[in-house]
Image (tube, rainbow, N blue to C red; front, top):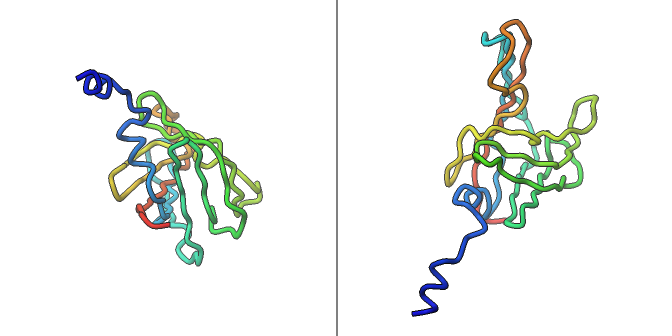
Length: 152
């Protein structure tokens, strides 16, 4: 009886949302960049359409993460830490990735809105995703679509 009471009071260190992130890896399926002026869409571009690398985003239960071939660049695997905001709507990661721009590297998932999360799909939005913005300011939103793969 005591064992039943003790085990029923155990606290899980992961939420169900955190559990969805871990287990297998997330393979990049699409990258779309949308440009806005205020709330008016100016243009949309699909990136990585001819990439020959399998881009993998892996979340570990110890809150570390890795990304292979970010931005379709042949590079060492990027490593960092990940967490969810208190309201579990945003993914934050300190992972630094090399990219194909002149900048050279970035923290692409430093503040990513979780647009969709399911057992087999994950959509993250980054860039100018703040809820309040000027109606005349140029904005850029990058949307990453991933599909869960269960075997490494």
